Image (cartoon, rainbow, N blue to C red; front, side, top):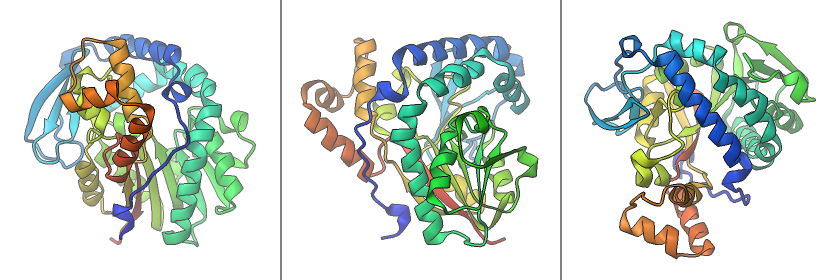
Length: 339
């Protein structure tokens, strides 16, 4: 079986509140919504875009969230915001918004321990294994883009796989949060990397296609790009749809489908190495959404499963979602293909 179709099952006992404490998430969302109005409130400044995954123009408007229109591509079924803020407007937002500062000063730091235990160690082991199996062993540079969990460098350093660790345009200075030997650089300086990671970044890029293409140019031949994102193909997003409480602009401009992610990488001349969905929280997300808003009406089976079945059934169902790439947390490894 190819790695692309690998069935990944992960269980670390992760609870939503550990990496998304309700009070912090609520405040981050409140600030994000207020800042979105301040930075993007003029509809005349928004621009139309084709599907950010496959590039198709055909689409259907499916719902609005906080005055922003989400569309679904009729080809790959990705869901995305259009019209959307320009690339320049998004750069200003992430440089100057209160929500961005809150993410760094509170959200990231206050959940750092739980994220390292449940997510970062797993990410590092995953990347190290794939690099060892399929990477360019002569390109021993690892870089993380816009790091807001600098402890990833401690995990990568412990593997002993890479000679050089680079933090590219970090949101949190790695020297304050990591004891590993990390060098900070600007994006323009990144080149000939053996592996680059971007955790939870694709979903708020103006153009994922341009983002991946630029990153491809910074990879050495056979270099690997690792990323995580949210996929609209996942159980919780499919059943909650427009009632999903944690989807908002600009954090979630792009909710690419599993098929759309494959198309995106193909368009960027990247070879798919792994596309898996080892998420542990889909059932929890749906349960908590119902707790917050009892008026939500789920499909009958989903409602029965979530409200009437026990923790063992929920765990077994979550494992099923992981095995069949039906969780909304997706992780991807792609290799720089030949010219």
